[in-house]
Length: 181
Ligand code: GDP
Ligand code: MG
Image (cartoon, rainbow, N blue to C red; front, side, top):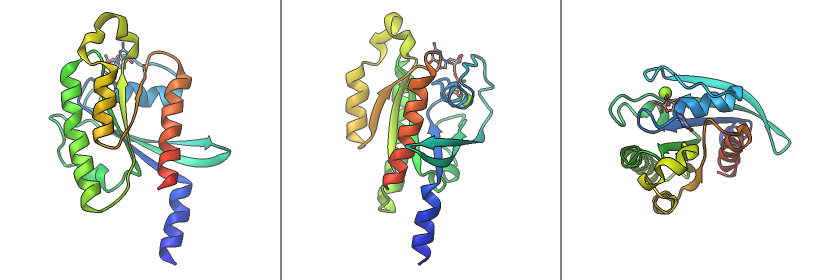
């Protein structure tokens, strides 16, 4: 019976944890989703959880977004590992070290979910797609896609400073993925 209630609750609440190294654009993506605006300078040390009521596929859902701000890679991960219904792991396509760095997060998440035999969806996001024509050589789309498939993650490239719809779409996809679990 309790599991039935648990299921009902997770149907209209969705906790999304945004992970990735400093500078990859986690806060910019979060703010874009919540306000439709691109804020270019955001305190890199600020970690917060925001709430937004969304309609996804005609169903209302309370979406909570934890915009994490680890200083040196994954530390004290319990706060999001035990909380999240879905993980969004972000790197920047114009920065190879952000791509290397995000792999630590994928490892931490995969290890955690395997250990508990949970199916917690992961969405890998290559951010700063607007930088494509200047520095695409850093991380190719194929690199991102292959990393995602190794972790059973969905993969998209986005830009926090371009259209809102594409950013909203990946957050709504995260809600859908969490609903299926
Ligand atoms: P966080 O440390 O992961 O939260 O990264 P921020 O959201 O603070 O972004 C780091 C830097 O990248 C800031 O200077 C942002 O303005 C910039 N930035 C974030 N997203 C984008 C993007 O999609 N395109 C471009 N060109 N810059 C971005
Ligand atoms: Mg931030």
